[in-house]
Image (cartoon, rainbow, N blue to C red; front, side, top):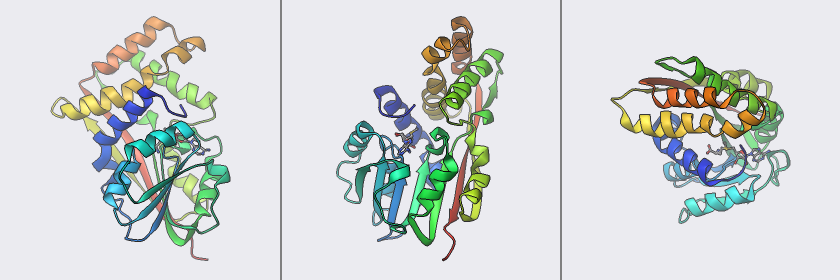
Length: 259
Ligand SMILES: C[S@@+](CC[C@H](N)C(=O)[O-])C[C@H]1O[C@@H](n2cnc3c(N)ncnc32)[C@H](O)[C@@H]1O
């Protein structure tokens, strides 16, 4: 799931476009503040962050050089962001170098999310904010329901678990942030509700984001023997055919305790 490929790139951008208000309407950083975006990927959130806070200065990091290159291309012209290729566990910044840190869809891929968040929080000045956004695939429900679709989704969850991640991490944001030493944590669920009256979300979320993500693990799921091809394909067809689809993201905001 890490790194850049054209399909993931397109999916993340469709997702960002469809969800921008839901996830970002309450994220804005003051003029002159220094913001660290950890795990920026191909810049799907970066474009929104820099546009919504044009006077803040962003440093967006990712371990993948290809993703950084793509993020740089996507945000070309934005004067308030610089990109750094680095690992969250070995970032080249002094403690308290930033006023705020923003992490989106990253902890779900990391085997030691508390340690990652602790490292990131240490880079924020006392009193500075820490924002974490994650999904939770266990929160997906839909109509008509489909056992095959549920099984296809479980393949994605299981493969991510085997890779050291947790695609149901959204529900753990509060305890993770507290354990990481973040104070004043408030988590808000952000539910995406999709039906035929919202064709942009049917296309941008149900199809191009969620279903495309599950469909993307087909080869791995078959190779791992988690499911047979016919069953997986029936599940994907059912997901594309849903009339109603619900999914919940979780956004946690807290701050580094004052020294
Ligand atoms: C699913 S992408 C999310 C990208 C972006 N935040 C977004 O919302 O579109 C996860 C990103 O985390 C990055 N990542 C994973 N582990 C990392 C680590 N230890 N250090 C830095 N980046 C990491 C991956 O390279 C990938 O680009």
